[in-house]
Length: 451
Image 1 (cartoon, helix red, strand yellow):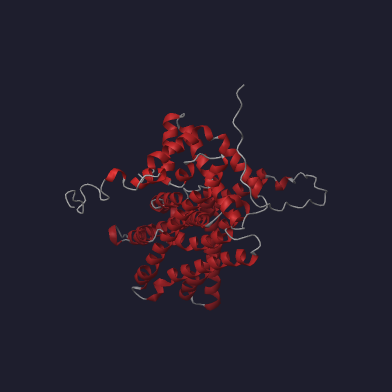
Image 2: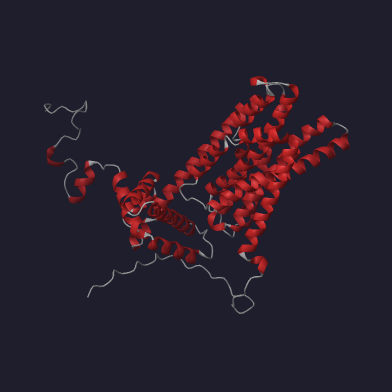
């Protein structure tokens, strides 16, 4: 009688304390209606929808219907490129689409509405109090706008950090959520600026490259489409560092995001105030600060992405040893090229797109498992570590039919060819077998006739 293979065992870890029972003796209580997920989702969708309608009406009233349509058509141009860049950055452990949709909608609707209302009110109040409209505009742009706008955008990062904690595990998650939120905010703001510029050109009769619309398009869409994402990403980095901190580090978890927010406000104020630094102030700040800062943050994001892949390769062998993963899977899961090859192989040999999606989900769960184990080894895992680990392992086990052979194929196809010593020395043979020269044939140093 055939027996089934033994079920893989869980790797052993230090025990973590369980949550104490509540005052009701540990009995489960049904949540109130306002605590249920459908109530929360409904309230959030209603808030974003109302904000979108109000912001649409305000922008259309200021730009006119024709200006709104022109601004919309021009403002949408950089959005796909920015979203694709942040999605590429998030490919190691891709977050749910609903988080990205929420972040973009919050930036385009709620944050933009708060910024327009608060900035207009503050500028009018300062102009009335000082009787200096020009000075009020400058003060509003360099002081009020950075504080209001960065706080409104940071609210989206905070909400994801608090209510989607499992999806927010590090710096890359903070960068992606903050960047997508800022992309939505810049999209709405660009509609307003470009639509207003188009209306100005209609009144003055300017056309072509000398028009206000062309100048606004060049500055906001061509030169600096990354400006708002650059500012808010600093806030996202702060929340990402907090997400990687242990739960007992309360001061760090509170002060680092606050420091990131203040840094975002400062860089935003410097950018907005560049126009007051003289005729070439804008270009000086752009060349001396914005471009280097953009390059530095891009390097940091790519380096963090590579570090995540290295964490996957280092943490998953423990699960391969326990039987949950195949021997070649840690290598394949630590390579984006091998991951892509595994999805393509599954799509061709195991049932098309559904199989490819299963492999993609398998890869995401394995990555989350590696990060979870890494946090546990660093002493930063929460009290739900064991529960979360078993959930991820169960998902991996349920999708292993198509994922394992696909990842094994990808590991073989993408692995580098080992040197000759890897073939011979493990079996006791010399590094250079059968007396062949150590230098390969054709190399300048190779001379078979030299004694």
